[in-house]
Image (tube, rainbow, N blue to C red; front, top):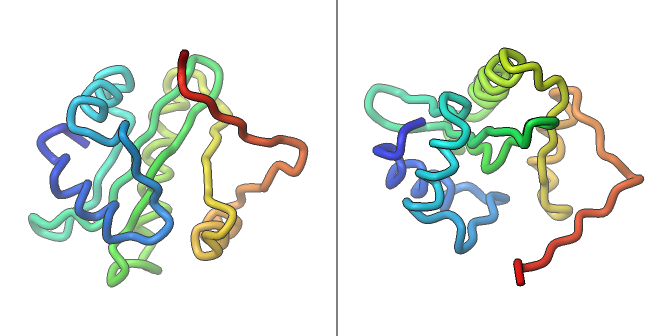
Length: 133
């Protein structure tokens, strides 16, 4: 993924239920994320159209994937799986062997995808969040 893809990727994210966008999903913020995590985020194209996208990066210990999305008419073709595998390959190159994702509790389709891919929910963790002070 390159920042030049931003408008098309944002349109895809907005069209996909379960992708939570916020004030950090601006061109400047995504450009900074892509720069910090160079070569770790991916898109899938059908011709010139972006039909899948995922942000991926790391904190030095764990990998993270955000906003995995595949256009509804392109699902069940392995595109999501291929995007995830591309992220895993890049994370493995730098020694990152575990990866975390965030899935909304009400996103049954997203949870089903990740479970089919072998991911497990962690019942022992609770995500907490605060704005920086």
